[in-house]
Length: 390
Image (cartoon, rainbow, N blue to C red; front, side, top):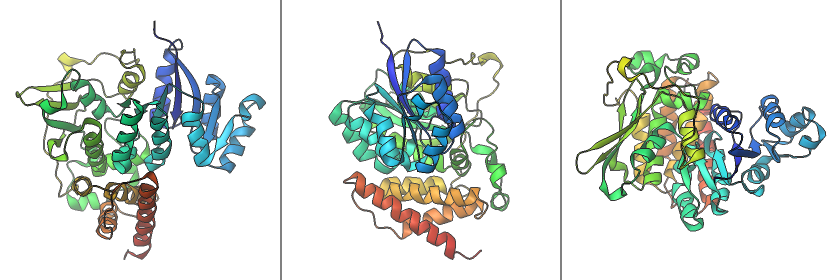
């Protein structure tokens, strides 16, 4: 008989976290939520805490912690922690069986690494953790024996398509991409894209940062680096293909010519439920895929001239060391500026390219070294943003 699985959820107020709680609350006999963490969405976090009664609640700083405490009855308010130490407490101190790492950006690296080091299984929705620190994170998982289960729809699809097969049988991994809302726009039209336009994704409901990354195709480049670490495949065997219908979530091509694809309704509750319940398949509240009524499924190569972010990510992955951490940090700073209206669409990749050009890659030997590269890249990106000619 399968016992109750204790869950820690970092990023519980984001799109992945909210979907995960739908899955969890649909299976009350299977899960106990022992901690929740967010940044500043204290109203929603308080609501989640009242429903789930976790042992630990973590937020980004003391101000957010005070705001959360004011919204909670005394027994829950005593469990509020904040800052880096708070996130570490939420990830590992309450001894969960599994951590759902769904924080946005490189902030997820340290608590995810800590959980894996402690032997806690991780359901990973925070791709930046492996982009920035893949070598260290995978080494920690191997040493402790903790499992790292992918939550991104593409990596979940690959994980499922690899089941029962050895990595040395793989000829190629195909990451599918919707192409975002702008796949048919020319360069002049792309230069005029606004944040509101970029946030209108045709198929997926995601947070602002990931949605913008999808529009630039940076998201797919980050996913290629993540796939390299997760599935022990060289980058040259990982390709991206545009699939606008978002029905085939990714594919694995084997050396005998067979291609195994995972298909499904584009709903993140599916891969979340697969990771949280693994190896069991839990009902995720998703209806059947209407196969007979779907119509044609189309595939096309990405255009890296109109969407240069994809090739920048592959370049960072090929260089290795701490260069992917620099790529990721510069991109986070640039996307933040774009969403604030102070940078145009192509300015995102111009900023990332400029920061990468000023960096000499160093080996990824420690988490501290990765965080130092991350901080350097953010400062360099902000300097570029201040000094550029508008």
